[in-house]
Length: 174
Image 1 (cartoon, one colour):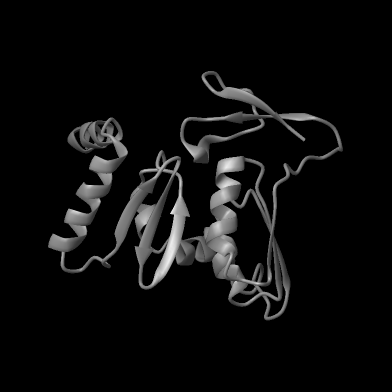
Image 2 (cartoon, helix red, strand yellow):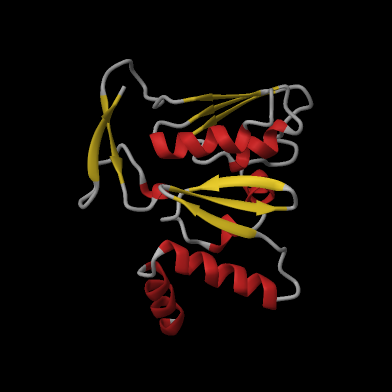
């Protein structure tokens, strides 16, 4: 476990192009992995796989970005018989990140409202859901009242929070 942590920390310190090359080599030599091409496009990266293009932010280096995260997210955020996406229904994806859940929900729902306050995540969200006419991306922060709130941005785009956590940059969002 310690060696895996060391490897992850070492990989995080590599330049984006080196990580991209390593990932492509891994996919080529590993026969069970889906083939893909990763292109660093600062400040975003683009993955081409199965004829589709996915945009994401390079600081998020978890393996899920390179796989089929959409299906895992659908399973995680739905519960058969309780919380289900109904055919033609309306889905609100609050904190939509880069659109993984929204893309999958769009396959069944009549309308998906994807709300994401961070400008970089929102850019990727729009690109990743652009092929779906029933997805409406909105760059806002959802809060209990209509006032100015601070969104603290972490170095990893999954760490953004309205909580005041040490070490996060503070940006004001309306």
